[in-house]
Length: 633
Image (cartoon, rainbow, N blue to C red; front, top):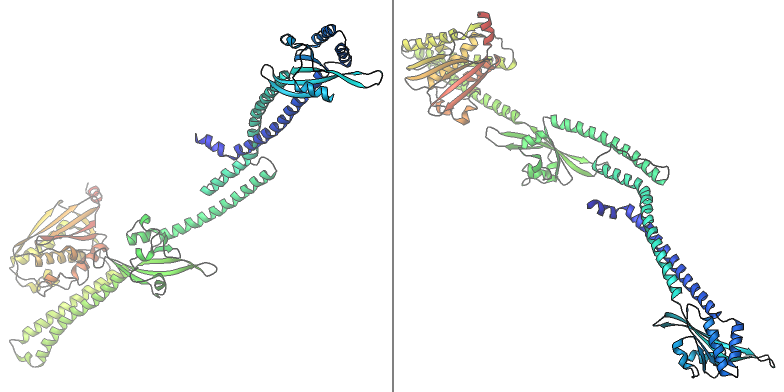
């Protein structure tokens, strides 16, 4: 149905209907003129025929019969003439003398009127004027009728003058004439319908021939508007329409080349924007976002559909602080801190620039989002590191200065206090030395200059060796901890009872590691487990293997670590506030060194903890058990 409606709205139908209307108007005008002319000609011919129904000799004979003294004989002769002159179209013939007396009538029904005076005005006018009287009337019986009153004149021999002696009155039906006209009109209308039908077909064909190139151009324009530049318009001729089609084809090729070039540039720009580590946002001249790359969406944690078209100030949550003009006046950009103080904190440095047309008119803005979270965290950690180092060094130095000043004031002569003062100063000195060594080791690990002395060891045997040393500390009941390597490498341990439980899924696990550094990691973690476990607590050491890793886990029954502190536990100098006493706390570098060592060995370290339940410190190291099984087979 829609195709039919489209056809009636099409240019083809409009051109065809114009052709058909022109044809109809032309045919109707010609037909009306032809029918009218034919009708008039038929009427004139009919009238001429009726006018000539009585030749002159017949009229002379009728005139002699009228003036015949023998009226009866004259009337008989007149009747014979009328009967002889009767024709198909003639409905009535009547002869009247100059006195208006009816002398003869062809209609049998009117024979009774013979001898009576006529009342017909046409006859009287013809008698009085001597001129023929003609007119058309409508007869109920015969339809259109032609009426003729023809004067009968005789020439007077003595004067040579024509004298009117009577009138012949003729009534003739004209239906034959109008029937002929009607038949002509039927033929004409039939021919007109046939001509219109053929004209419709020819008009559609001709108009289609004319509009087909235009339709092709229209369809091509629609395709161009939709972005389809692949097809071309067929060129059927070299006329104006052909030149138009050729021009459209050239235009299509130019648009396709321009579009391809634009698409390549856009793809290049999209690729650049997509792979940029910075977020990029472009706006129109009023600050509405028009372009945004994936990195910016990640920074803002938004979807493209909910951000495009919005104000950049609203999206960046700066609308209550700045206007667009004020933003452009910021020389060093603006810092945005999202989720401040949380684990997913994000700090962005936002720089703005204007987009200008060739005439200098500002057409939009470009906003670059640079992630400076790590930089800010590094700066903050660096400040905290300097503060912590200063704090950790100031405390033993202050203590040493106090004792040394006391010794300088004469306390060295006191045999009861002098050894204690010297011993404390020595312990604080050793503490600072260990701290400096730890810092140097961390610095080497950071620079990548830390050298590992790698060798293959049996991790099970090595772990048992380390744990046996801690078990020995319990058996010696505290003993001389100053001579214990397990203690001297870390903080002095209080006299505390604990139990170490060992769980291994293999009897032998061979790894390529640095034994000294791995021992330092295990000692660090177990030392913390002992310090933060309650009296008589259990410390569980588990070793299990996977296809590609060996996992070492140490679980204590201490106070646990809150979720907030868990992410910072491996930071340098970080210590849980509740345990930051000189009795239990160390320098805060042990776990930081452990993390660097494990990562240098290609592993990973992490912590799982529940407050008031305990903590599990785990680390994994690369391990290929298939290799050792093949070697032992």
